[in-house]
Length: 376
Ligand SMILES: Cc1ncc(COP(=O)(O)O)c(C=O)c1O
Image (cartoon, rainbow, N blue to C red):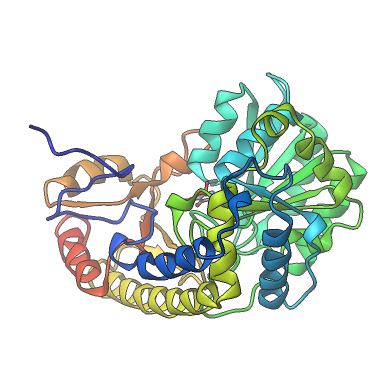
């Protein structure tokens, strides 16, 4: 009988697949969540098993707002938070409620390839706009906005997937300014905001949002566990309103009330804070390991050391084709993500993305040794 698959991705044990952008299974916080569950269940509050408040459990939103305020060094209001089932679900809901088939959305080139899948589900017309090491290039974006008149711009403004870039303070102000001038809204996917290693990034995009046009998306997937399916949207109440009153939440109630209650205990007991500290230290070490090994053993790859997040975004000289290298790498049981996946227009063929979160240092080194036999 075939082995029963329980997780989204199953990698053969003797492979090192740098393409997987997920946390390492072995460091997921099962003991902490066990403690938090016990803490919550022993309170015998049966409301946690009831349909939840549409916007998300009020007590959880207060704890989350306190945690985020401490992390950001700036106040987050519980009323500015809507609890979601993660960023993917938030993106789906935004498309469902705010777009019509054929509407244009602008994404970064490169962008998170699975967000592109969600936009395709809603039959949106996707247009790419270039970025550099400081995020979206404002002049090029302005031209694209004038030409294509988007409903929204989807940006990953911090420790970008895949490029690692962080949008500068000035460009954040300019971007929000454009959203007002040209009447569109901004979807800021800030999934890596709290995973900073060598810099303190600018505050989340919602802090720049004087006109009320920013939906800042956060998630517990990368700071706790993706299996929780829990996240939030931070935005001004007027912008949140259509989501809170939508039919989906009216019928099913707020999202993941039971899991919210358990994560509330993680926050109350300080377990989320200590686990995040552990993750930042662990990922920082892995990032250093992978960067220095790639520089030493695969010198033809060019890249900048990321200052947070999960990924190293590297390139080979123009003309190289990372997809065909991937097939060759597979023979050595090593993988990565080819750049073409992150492109709205099938470009970026000479780029490769490596994740340093899924494996420990020993396996990262083993993977680089294998890669060196293919790329060098
Ligand atoms: C940029 C980006 N957005 C969203 C997600 C998925 O987030 P969630 O698990 O909260 O749906 C990921 C996961 O890799 C990501 O890299």
